[in-house]
Length: 253
Image 1: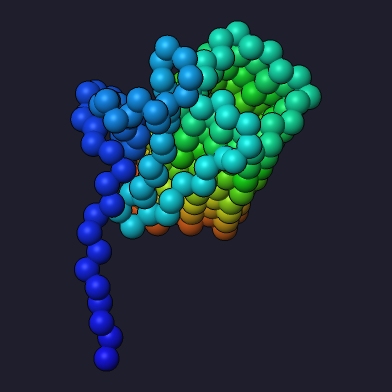
Image 2: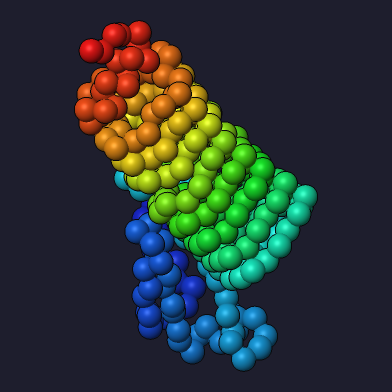
């Protein structure tokens, strides 16, 4: 016989919600206030104290957060980093604008809900990083590699991702419209249902890639390697369909 004892809710202190700010489709910042919080904050005029409550999407896993140096919500404008290693850095909600990272390595860093605008990551390596709900607008990632990273959901707006290494990445359902992906390695990646309209895929490796239900209309496909790619219900315009047929060995008159 099992006896279950009712447990009353634990009340730390009474507060009120004074402001709610939606930072992205997946992150909400809630500001609480009240006299009982007076001893809860840090010393200083702001009495600021942050509490992170992380909840998954329906049916989705919890995002992994960094546990090292805290750059939470930092704003980096015009910064320059060369040959630096960032390990376990929390860049959640950070804004990085007009900056340049060259030959840098990011290990197990959290980029959750971060915003990257007109920033260059040249031959950088992202290993085991969480890019959950991050935004990359007009960025240059030439020659960079993403290894075992959480790559969805993302918001990608233009930019040059030439020669990027996304082998085995999960980009299903993502909107990659207009990205320059020349010479990129997308082998074994999951691009099912992704939108690649007007993308430049010239010379890209797309071997054994899942392109089912992907939209490739207007994409540049010259020299793309599509061997063993899965193409069920893939959407192509006439030029793309002809080129795909030729790449498959067909003779188009």
